[in-house]
Length: 429
Image (cartoon, rainbow, N blue to C red; front, side, top):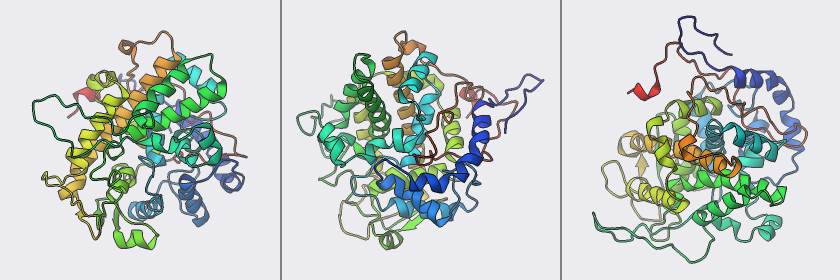
């Protein structure tokens, strides 16, 4: 669906991406079962979610040809329970979150960087969660990739100490948690350098793209940059219930699915489901871009991966580990844990999560531009009008139907309505 140009001079919604998605919907939905049974890549927790939905016949925003979810509470609850099956070292943000970050980044690449990226990752889409966005999680623990990238399981986080003392107004210089480079803040610049080096073999640069795409998401999940008394970023902090406006899940329901409900999973998965609400991921990407504070976006490009990790650290220290009234979330590792409600926790955390997703997408685009476009400078960072974005579609370069799982796309009916008289979002409240 697309809007025709407004003769009064209003804005028209770009139709390139939606038309391409509509044309491919029938083929995608018809081949869903074939894709699941012919996967030739390692399948871990990410594929569990989609495979279970497919086998149960549950419609969702991940497969074109299915309508968007009609019962948000049922869909969100099932998604949360399935995501609670993840191991304690689960990815920052679920596959929907990583895909949204990649989709947002695509909208802010220079033409030269976009062309170079598409050539490098062909035949895959940058929004493909299995082969690109969440690939780093899928191969974690795989013997082949452990031999190729030793200790890669440690590259998804950095454990800055939540109890490290500081004095307001004084310089804060927290030490790295351990010597060496087996942490996310060290690996991001490493893979950016590999990607930017045209003398590197193609497969090395391809993997560099995949690690970067994923690690920028991990870096911006606050509980992947902090630990409190060894709790592994809240993995051992129980939560009795998450009682959001769109998603509700209790510890008993999580236990029935074989897992504990914990603070880390709240930030990885459940808050994200609450923020997405009834929006499919394509529409969610558009909303993140439309709400992007463009007057601030270029300031986000400054600093290093370690600087960005420290931003996440402070969010973890001041927000993830505290209630809305600034009292700390209990440190007990035994249940039942607190009930998180919109009033005492959730509503105040959703804007933080949205901004972190936006920063991750913008900074990922920046690193890709630096690596793939020799003429790029931060002053040239693209900030196109979100309602007139005519960059190539993130859905256009999908993996072959015969040997890859679905790319978690929305139904063609799940399209945003853009007012023809929309005002520049910088002027919106």
